[in-house]
Length: 402
Ligand code: C5P
Image 1 (cartoon, rainbow, N blue to C red):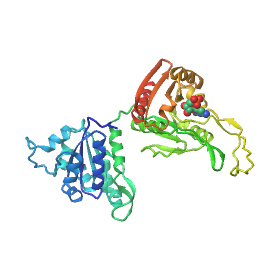
Image 2: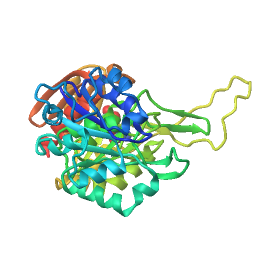
Image 3: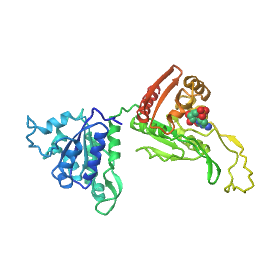
C-alpha cells in the first residue's frame, strides 16, 4: 500500500547495533511510497555502511555538517525544511541526551534542532541496553524530549545484543513503519474507545469437528488498525483467524458465538463505538458431543439438531448504553445480491444507526473489498480498494456521525 506516497522522511541513524534494522525500515518506507533522505552520525557509520543506506534509499547519504554538496552549504537547514517528518532510528542514549540539551555538534543533532518545530515532527526510536534505558538520566531525557514536542516511540522487550534480556531494544522495522503511517493519519477518534468483532465463529460438533464459515477477519482487523491510527483505544474480539494483532490493539480471542457474545458484552460498558464485523454463525449444534463421534461401519449417519445463536449486535444495539446515545453501533451485512435493499432492511431489523453492506463472495478472504454505507439519511458507496484504505474511510465516516 502506497500510503506514504508524497511524504518525504529524513531517516536519522545514530550509533547502535540496531542500525541493522534501519536498513529494513528504510526499505519499508520507500515501499510504502515515501522518499527517504538518510542522515547518519559518525558512530552510525561504524555499524552500517553509507553504501547500504544509499542503495536502499536511492539517495546520497549525509553524514557531515560541512558537506559541500548543498549550494548554500547548509545541509542542516535544507534537509530539515524539505521533510514531512524526521525519524531517528536508532536513537541512542547519547544522541537523546544531546537532543535533550539542545546540542548541535553534528549534522543529525543540528538538523533536529534547526527543523521548523511546528511543521516537521520528530519521531525517536530508542535503542539501547536495558540498564541504559532504565537509568534515571535516560528517562529524564525522554521526558524532556517529550515535553519539547518529540514523539518518543516505545521500545521492545526481549533478548539484547549484549546478551542481557529486558526493555530497550529498538522496535522492529514493521512496527516502526506502522508508527510512521499512524503518525500521518488524522485523529478523529482521539479519546474514544472502539470495540470491534472480527472473523468467523466456530461452533463445536464434537472435540475435533465444528461448523464455521469463510470469513477471514481481514476487514475487522483492518478496522481495528484504522481506529487505532485514528487515535482510539481499541478492543478487538476475534474469532478463530491466523492474523497478527494490529499494534496497540487489545485482542480477545474467542471461538463460539456464545464466547464472542460474552467478550463483547464485557467490553461494551467502556466502548463509545461497537463495530460488529464478525460473521457470527446463525445456529450451533444443540449439544456438542464430549467425545469424537465415531463411524461404526454400518453406514449410519449422525443427525445434528441446531439451536439459534443469540444476535450479538441486536442485543448490544438494544442495550441502555446504545439507546441513550453513549454507544454508536455499526453492523455489517454480507449479501449475494440486492445489496442496498438488504442493507436497509437489516439496518432496521438490527436497530443500528449505520449498516455496512458488502458482497460476501467478493470479500471473503480477499485483501480488497467495496462497501455500501447505509444510514437514516441514505447510502454512500466506498468503491473497491484495499481493506485498510476502506477501513480508514469507514472510521472517518463513523467519527463524523458521533
Ligand atoms: O443477520 P446477519 O448475520 O446478516 O447480520 C450481520 C450483522 O449482525 C453483522 O454485523 C454481524 O456481526 C451481526 N450478527 C451478530 N450475531 C449474530 C449474527 C450476526 O452480531 N448471531
